[in-house]
Image 1 (cartoon, rainbow, N blue to C red):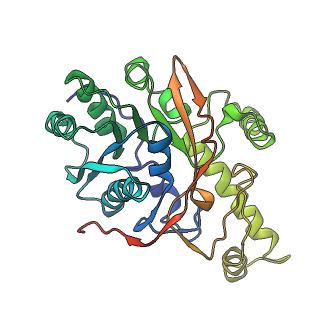
Image 2 (image 1 turned 180 degrees about the vertical axis):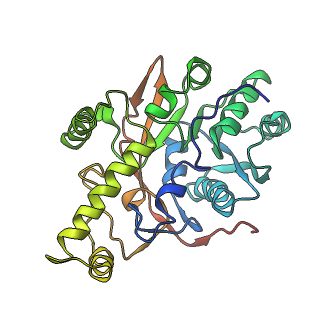
Length: 289
């Protein structure tokens, strides 16, 4: 063990709470679909060679890891290291770090729990392989802030994505979100679970508004299935979700909001709040591919 604290529970930052429900706040997501969003971010950060890590036991983690590598290749970058067969929850990452260094990797992403991801960054630094960019789907906001000084030290300079507007943008939607949290006594930076819970309630309210004056289970399901413009209470910015469409990423319109952790704060990345990719035609991944 590298002694890195666990920040969250979802292996790739977003799926367990939202996508496996009948009506998730990101609609019908399919991690087999490849989009260019990850690749575009690596490229704008000056990377040329990507390393990606995922868990063998979890199809969504393996697909996400392979999708990130395919995304890099789709924008002309090299995917020099791909390992979608890493043991679940392991922090035995020294062999991975050495393999990434040998492959000349200068960009890293891990579709894993934070303990594996942060251990990997620590190991890469220990072997003298300091990637130009490292992107993780778990850790933005209160999850990292509450994880303690050890995790915050490891996180320096790392990029974290969010599927909603970061509160550091101070939009009308993020201001309302924080004010609503304060009204129930929450004054710390919002966690992933708080974002997900807040926007799930917004989705339920929108569904109830279309379900009639005496909503039933069937009328609510019908109303939810016909929502084509869910904005997550404005936290999707100018974007929205059509719940009836299959999409390749958890962000609306294949968009993610990226922020780098510096000191004790998250800094939104210029040109990447949000960064929106496109679906790569005819390209899919599977856990065994």
